[in-house]
Image (tube, rainbow, N blue to C red; front, top):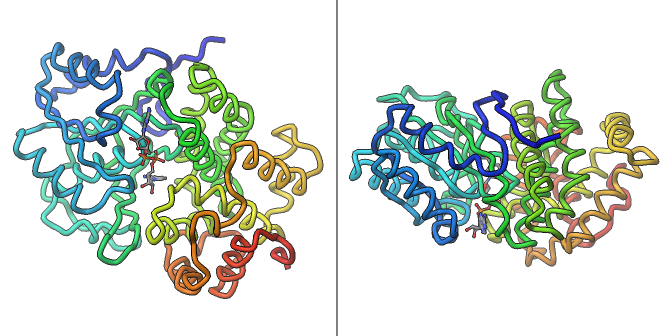
Length: 388
Ligand code: NAD
């Protein structure tokens, strides 16, 4: 079966090797004659990047490049990108990169459409009216993890408060997505591993969240299976087109599914990432077994069902063992200590995790003492008694 397709769940997706060649024509056909590319300096230096720029120019699209996005984009990056958009008199945004480039590009679209500060669009607040519609956004992921290309949300760091905030606006949903596995061939093994575990975390938390959403459940289940079948291959064989394509699909599926909900893996991961500058997929991966163990009383039957669908024996225990084995095979550390998280920080991290918008959606109700218990377990590397 050829791994190639045109999908509209939830937005239009061109999936398959070489499909980046279709982007210039699609941008031009959308009436965008002047575009701002938003990316980071690492991605801007990759061989395919110059081809994308020249292809756009050949299609009659005047391009400016903003490549100053930090890992975990900051409000200042978004402001500088918005200034670059205005200086170029751009009519659309092409966001290229991992979650950092995509989130910054989407946020630039929001920033040029409103006079409100970015933080007014935090997910928990009522959405302010825009001054103008958000310009068309074209999204090209070059990592397979965040799924930001199919989402209405972005994550932007408030550097002053050391907080990662989730911003939401329906119009930040990209108009067109290109999932081209060839763009991910150069991803180093550790970023492939960390971002792949991010995709797993999204599918997993969406799958077991306790809300009625059979559409998301089905997508998440298949997303987890794709990670199981493809992540190690993508790490070990970087140019394996099928493994890379399937990981891009799993990432987009994770973010499609988490329109349903996420949970405590993300509530804990966000403050750790903001304070200790650890990669989001890595923090999710380290926390995953501990949160699974904590949630066990509420998710055991569902995880057993996932295990059956994924050809994993022995129900919840088998699934947990699979997660632990996968992490070890990917050289992901077992403890938060390995990410340089300090014992003195745990209390504040637990407080901040309680304030995270994902916390109320965790299937087992978590109080601050529970968050602290999970953090302490993840520091010590033991899952004993977490399910009590
Ligand atoms: P990233 O975008 O920060 O990129 C990590 C590194 O990989 C960078 O140095 C980048 O230059 C490099 N890179 C990217 N593509 C490459 C390629 N093809 N070849 C070689 N190097 C490449 O990492 P990420 O994990 O994709 O994104 C993380 C960000 O996404 C975080 O800020 C996180 O909070 C956010 N996030 C957003 C959502 C969402 O729904 N919007 C979901 C999850 C995470």
